[in-house]
Image (cartoon, rainbow, N blue to C red; front, side, top):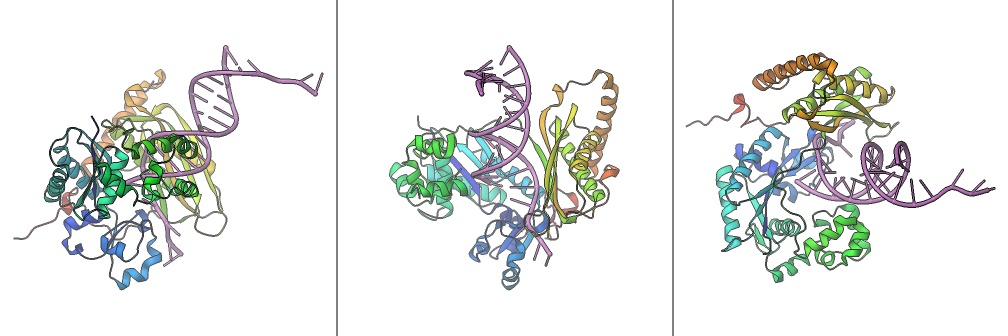
Length: 421
DNA sequence: TCTGGGGTCCTAGGACCC
DNA sequence: TCTGGGGTCCTAGGACCC
């Protein structure tokens, strides 16, 4: 039996989240910024209409923002993560199997479903809107790649403005594929689009009709798979139980350039602290800590970029051990005389906590450390993140800017909205 | 003045081994 | 002057995604 996938994607997700709690943002141009208040990462329809693009730096459009009174917000991931979970819960009621693909998208398995698929999709949209306040679009097709493409068609109203696009019918599919530019196909980025354009592949239909062997030659196996997916042959199954993750990263651009070692040490110690928290929250330990720092790629002056990996043996999730490894690494790549713009700590070599082979001579130390970490986590969970922090992380001159953040309406008791009746 | 963060997958090439 | 072949593992870098 042919597969049927539905991709449910939230519209302008971060903006929609902000609007749920602040109705004054309805109908006006709204943008949500990246960390450091740097670039736009979400735009309302009104802001897109003004010509602001995805990833555009705020400073480039200051004038436009003032002239049109654009509401500009810092990102509030606690809020978005919480609403995302509510949307997912709602979707689970509509399909026997579901893959959470990103914070604002899920694939649903609708294989074997009888009755009208578009009507079912319309019901999904209505229900999610009513239960969570979030608007969505739904794309339906026999492969995940085509479901993504159907969702694009629904968002752009290529067929109609119902917010739903069903591409299970081959005739409808052919007509739509011929209208979708190659760069909009899932998995085709800028570089691949350039290569394909040179081969006169301009639309999704052109790629579908390409010789799979040629696709493999130009774009490796992922390109070949894309050709089959576009032909309606599903090569990518639903990922129901995501495989264990391979890396944990905490990286930030600085609010201002860092030029002295002490500040770099504080920043890296802070990132290591946060990374260790994530590690313990997922019951993992790491055997390697990678540290990097670099100057700004956008600014003139001497540039520098370096990274180093420090082994941790035996594997650990202890904040103090990770701080020690990260700062030792950072010291090795640190150079005086540069304006460092960013640094990060990336934990590679993750293993489950239970699989760590402890050093027999240090079992007692490990147990003491584990108790300390458990106490630390308990206090920070109860009293709020950063209630208790290692001394090495104190000093915050390098911290990122976040001037426009909305309250944590759903995740901090003190910021829950109050309704007056 | 001001330009995000956190992931995955694929491949090529080097190290190492027999 | 002449200096194997094949396998595995690891890492760095490229490309892509949201």
